[in-house]
Image (cartoon, rainbow, N blue to C red; front, top):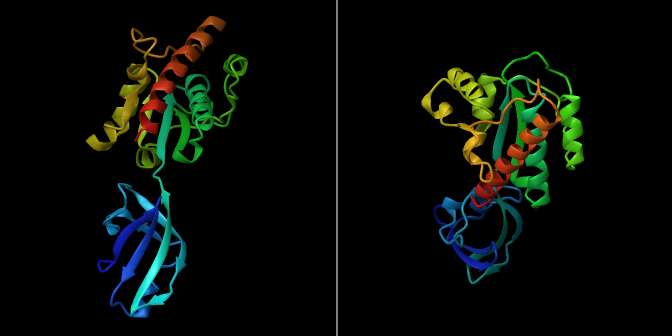
Length: 232
């Protein structure tokens, strides 16, 4: 790949001139192969990984010229929402964020999940009150509860978004190093319309208005998260 001279053709299609490389070396460029942009010196400002989708190898003037069509393989933004039991706030955040991402046409750019600190409700649907209040706003809050798994989730997700200070301290205590702790962020730090709020309060022991308030905060925070990560 070091001998690959790449010049932009259009969009993310490139004319690769290989000289003089034996034919057997060219077979390294296969349809479906993933290439890193660092191997594409004139990649038109694009960064990340690309997928070779077509190779046309006419031999011209002793050089092999290949029209390689690349599709950018954007790295997904992986977000995990956390609350105490994964039946109220975090599954609602999961549903809200997923709907916002889908509506923006960015489904393939995000991986979204939720989990709880404790395992009391593992395997259960979200609280019926959160499901009802979410449905009134057009959200399908139906994530099956699971417990946060520090052995896997710290490595799998880019950011772990917690609903309150207790969640924050609980998850940070499970981190094995500073890099994992830096992945833990608070939903309240992303609030725009509700900047005075210091947490997303647990509505479990509350009334309908408490579920609506939690959803107000979650919608606010998810909007800011989408604007931030969609621009990366």
